[in-house]
Image (cartoon, rainbow, N blue to C red; front, side):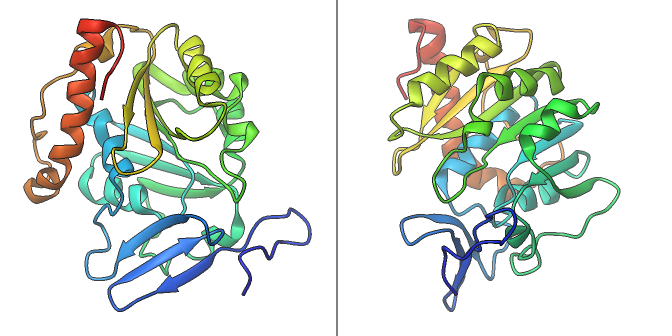
Length: 259
């Protein structure tokens, strides 16, 4: 099956699934791995950038509600479902071929607190009446970050769907020629709030912003395990969360993050 094969009506790319004895990976093209799962540890986060995205826990260790843009192989969705048992999670995925592989990647079934919706995330955040404590944006296609998920309107809408004090986290690629345009748009939509953290082993650059509190990211809490959070899962996150914490300290001292 070709990674370029598309739906005849909506031009969605069919992903390729590659398996080894220990892992299962999802590709849109031969250039980039979209997601990877360790077969014996299906809930483990395999990529550093996904662990950094969990840095929202330093701002809100026990969110009541979370929206996630992009399912992919379900790494973040599974992790949040398993280790944030009191959080209601809504995942928005536009590609039906990606959604069709949810069982292959051990994504849990929908229930009273976990829902995966086949929808355009840009439409969802513009039209929904739901409010969230956290919004995670990690939606990419074969060409990279779609225009609809990086526009001023999209970031404005993400701001609007957050509860007061809610946190937005976006996965961006530092090699994108428009990275600073995207960061400026996020900062404008969130009224000056912006913290960026680099993935040291890849091109991923994670942007954090908080609604109604431009200075919240300059005073993130220390890296302490939230009450009830699985201790072993937290231990795996600690080095990545430390990057977010240190970036917060740099932002407080220098006005920008050096991490």
